[in-house]
Amino acid sequence: MGMILDYIEQAGKGKYQCFKTKKICLDSVDNDTIAYNYDDKTIANATKSTFAETDHSRVKTVSIAYLFKSPKVPPPIFQYFLDGSRHTFKIDDIGIGKKIFPIIAGQIIVGCCKRKDRDTFKCWQLNNKIVMAMPDDYDDDDGGENFCRSFCETINSKVIDKISKLKDLQLGINKLLLYRTNINPQEQGRDNYKHRGIACIQNEMTDEEQLMVERLCKVGKLHNESWLIKDGSLEYNPSFSNLNRTQWDNLRSNYQHVVGVSKLFDPELLPDFEGNRLSKTIANLGPYERTKVYRYESDHKGGKSYFAVWYVRLRNHDFRETHFSDIVKCEMVLMDENDKLETDKVDMISANLIREAYPVCYGVDTRWANHLYPIFLTESFCKSKYVDSNIILNLF
Image 1 (tube, rainbow, N blue to C red):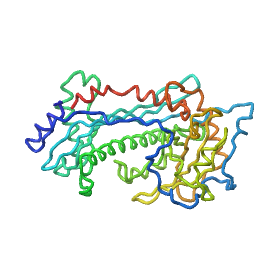
Image 2 (cartoon, helix red, strand yellow):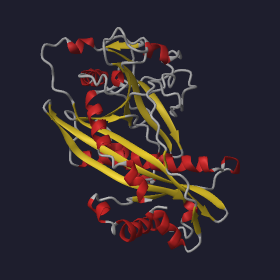
Image 3 (cartoon, rainbow, N blue to C red):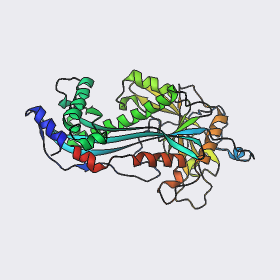
Image 4 (tube, rainbow, N blue to C red):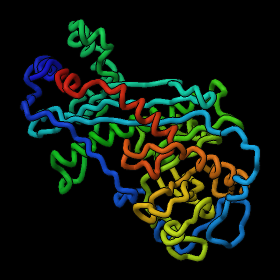
């Protein structure tokens, strides 16, 4: 058994038993363009969608080819690129009382790269942390955050700091996350607990992404001439966050110059303004075309969050693999249900996204058709900073 698990058993003085089950990596890669398990289906049953741009022309697609006819190419608006990534591991099963729960570990990396000019692309900030997810039954005194903080400090000082190699690598347990165990008896089982542990780690990663955006805003890096592309959806839900509600609400005000771009998306997410399936319009987008911008509502316990959603075809390619190749889903945060994006701004953002699609990472990433090259570079940089999985597993 590993060092940390040994310490948990010894410190528990018989309260806990670790079962020495096989340590495994829980990650899998899905390269399909259409995300069949996409969970943002809040208004998929709505009869019609509402426009979220100032031009209410009842057309299904908008051409932005006119922006590419100017002999003078304007400088790109996107200067910052954000990506979050995580690896999760099943470490062991722990017996607490008469129940058995999984122990999940995760390595989280959130990185932001900056492009000053076409020859300068470098890291602006990188956060790398190792976390553990354990059942809330482990905190038998209900100490909450203080208990979790004390646990990490004790593990790092009494176990990890005593091994010089780990200390040189600056490795340690950065945070203990507690997943809820008071679930419906019919849903109990180690697999359901395992998914709750993984969800806690995923939530921590998305919280770190939002905090990275906050840091960019605090130092004045995001403005009309300096935008951020965030890889993936902006549909953060306060119900799936390790932050308190006040912190979460404050972070939402930082997204005025942030565009979320998803390579994987559900084309059935929204109907169009006539109530027809938007997936057909998306699949038939031509070169230099986008859909209209629609308002998307995300329900959660605290109320609703609003987003502007549209789709853009990135390339003029006659031999694409599928109808959804070369298409990305774009999102921006709306402050309320009446907020709208200026149509000229949407066109400008879309044109800049098309320019970011070149050069391509063909042959290096199977998702190349839907990739933006600066995001590919940021993603590759973040993944290169992972600590070897064997080192992580041997900590435990």
